[in-house]
Length: 328
Image (cartoon, rainbow, N blue to C red; front, side, top):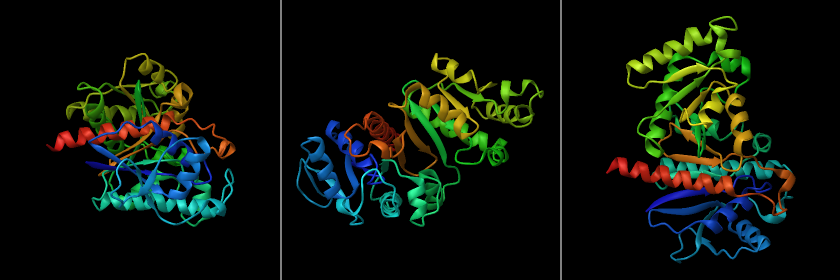
């Protein structure tokens, strides 16, 4: 039985709500066990408010049929206001996630599904990171950590993510592109196809128009693609960023490499925000999350949709099973 941790994210956001709604729809599995990292009191109160008849217990309890929770005692419901950003909740969200990462690194768990955190609240609490991916990179020491968006029709991997655009251009290099392609290739093999078709989006308008609008395609992307082909990882492109996603959604490609954050996130969130999953590639364990934020404006209203959280759980379970099969 593999253990998959679920962190509740920022308690003042919609994290606890989408977590309990996801748990209410999970089908029992003999292979993967969910354990929530958060506060049992918050989960119980949230489930009760939503009319969901879920039963929770401490994660070291022998009781069967209940959802195990690893409470850290960082915050209680009366300590904060739903929908309001605070350092208290930012601190709790950080420690829920950091605890889960440490558990995976220690071999006590095999993966993490993370509800959303609020970056500003986390920084107010003194944890100076730009998001989950940044924390993962620092805590794991992994050489290459990649942010990918996984949708039923398409995977979009990012060569750069939370960087100012001027700085992102400096990080688009031949080695980085090759690493992203190879990790994306392995993910496609594990989840979708034995013949991956990966396209590269251009950096510049019209993919540079043969140097007319910039030389990154000629000097970086195409040489990287030539090296990848020689190593057994053929790719397609580079194609203009304003058309390549449409071509992929029509079935021409299985994945697209976006060169910077909004180039990939914009199209994917426009297409289908509910079923998108953020997946971190390059880690020694599985990590996924829903493709949305803390949504403070609807926290406590009962309106949060759990589809992306459910999709994140299902993808994490699928990746764990694929990983287990590879190790047999």
